[in-house]
Length: 141
Image (cartoon, rainbow, N blue to C red; front, side):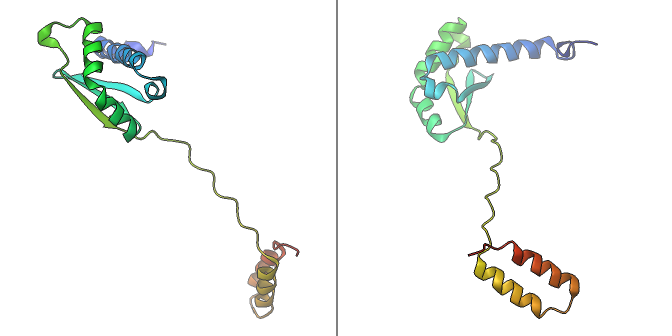
């Protein structure tokens, strides 16, 4: 069986490694509370695009954009004509685990009595039994 990397072009692998290296460098410059929420997404036309998962973090990045670009340019050792000169910040909400459903509110004893009373007047045998089963779920006050 071939390795997964054999199906991915070397150019794409190189770009992925560069973006990962830039993400690590970026995170080293930032406070820990901000660093884990930022990823370098792309470099295109001397523009560095960073993704964050919160609008507040995006504002903090905008305040630091010149320092970020300066540090990354130094680290990359780019020639003047290749310098990153613009920072674009995008906000992407991360997907989170779905919230568990709220626990069902227990049926009160009063509601159970009302359901039982309704069941007495229902002609359909199956519906009558279903209402009685539901009424038995009520609290015993």
